[in-house]
Length: 150
Image (tube, rainbow, N blue to C red; front, side, top):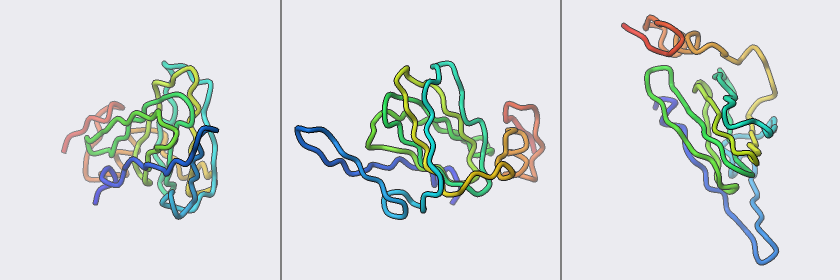
């Protein structure tokens, strides 16, 4: 199974009543890995692109706990999908070795990111051409746009 097929939306159980809603996510239960790191992104304008990298080992779950954003996921082999996040009880699971761009942030967006590893700068791939080379070493990369030829 390729990494794009592993990307999936997660729907977390909501509990609540007239007092409001409660969503609980547990590592290894609701999240398909043990959580080693959590961070959140807020205050990004709608024209800002975050992410722009792949990770060799780290898996992520992204949840817009407030507002909305979009996530573009690429596999380095010409396949890409765009996911819209905007429901605080839904997230997207991103396995290792997929390229991710987060963008289209609403003014009130708070994007929670759960990660399977502690931060390690050496496992980040920050150039798309390098990512394509690692994913498909038999391909020749042409330009930064991700185009390639055999």
